[in-house]
Length: 188
Image (cartoon, rainbow, N blue to C red; front, side, top):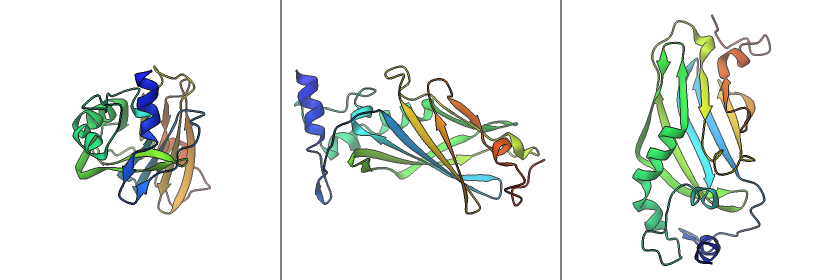
């Protein structure tokens, strides 16, 4: 009963402008946006529903059944650790280091529900083979096998979309994007 009460109070979360409307949470989903300039990843942004996040991290720091912005802020180190362990970006030379700057975590909405927005900055090993940039995503599949993550990759103002599921948790991005339809992408 306490967990139900806690989930209900997420809908009452007060952000800067006031309460956010909460509708039924029918399916667990996240959004990822990877921005690439030339062949270098610049930012990786994740948006995840707070309703999903409470299944992974105990955000209610004082156990009063209410979630405040302060409690989300206090949980930032744990949130970042979870995300950095659940998302892998790399190329043929190794893994990229995903760095969170001071203002990396903020509150937003996702499908009209309260959500977390995290902006990470990848630092990738220099690779001569640019066709091997890959992303792996492991968040929430253990808790919800129907979870989906929509990945949008933006390269030099062009976009491609991928759906990550419990059956398809990784995608090789540049090999997929190195097609005649995207001639400005330099692939070796």
